[in-house]
Length: 312
Image (tube, rainbow, N blue to C red):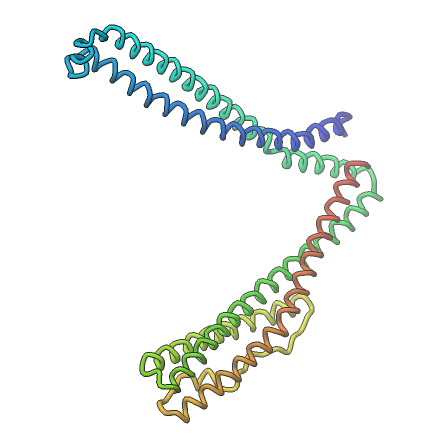
């Protein structure tokens, strides 16, 4: 093991704070550069305007003739030339500032690119020392193997929990959208029963069809969610069997009695969807909590591995 390992490792870790400093400086320089560009553009416009004023006094023009008649042409020309000179100096100053800031930004980009690899360098140094420790110290080798095995288990658990959370969110999203569509279908159904006409009937059926599609999507997502739950050692008896409404929704018929039946079916379905959501949301919250805990445990194990290697 090289005697300067600790020095090299500390130097590499120091690059993290250096990188933070460089990024902060780059943000400031970018802001200053944008300001310098605006100043340069404004100076160019002023110089162009002052140059036109000088040209108008030098060339035949109404303005030239007017100041000649008043006997003030030479005086006015000197004033305009002085203003043009001042504008040219201002343009040179702003252009120089922009060039300097552009160069500074380029140098910062290079420095950041050279420093950004500090994490890979640190990992490489830790791996270098770990290999040496494994050869020299059986006790540390055993402890490292144990820590790595535990971290692998936690990583797999975290992954499975994340997949379960994603699947559960999809079920909730589909059911929440279905709930909104059912609410709209019921409202339009009420309006239809009160004489809303063909438009109300059409919108009611459209909303019911959309709700059916969302519930079918939720059923598919629920099957995936249950499989993900099994992967994390959980079980749920939730189901999205809604008593034939999905088929019933395809056979809307005209008539007050049938409309009344449909309204009752929609209300029943709303209640069942809400029951599913009420049961599902706490379960999803628990899964999220467990997943966050697994992420935290994995980070803690990684820190223990690094500390063991660093201080051994």
